[in-house]
Image (cartoon, rainbow, N blue to C red):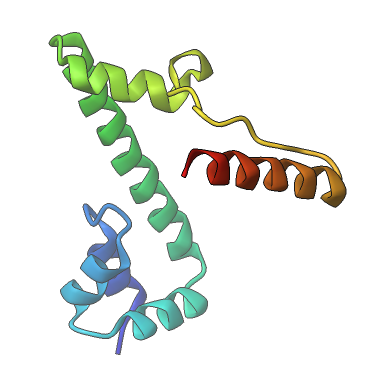
Length: 115
């Protein structure tokens, strides 16, 4: 039986990961979810754990960037700044279906001409 105290202790330093919590309690993930239904206040602790893990991950990224890790810097910029996202090679065709059919037929004709 999962008690409120056992659940709270299992959440501590779990990163808010249900698999970790269930392993600590020696129960299934389903049992953990049921325990959260019985003890809704424990959900706030879970949320806090997840936010803390997120903060740690952001801090690690910041530290990598500060230390000069170029690949982390590129990844971060491509993830957060549209100016640094890879450019698409193909324009997306928008409009009605007839426009799309004409476009497709034109591509097919160009392909046939080059074969």
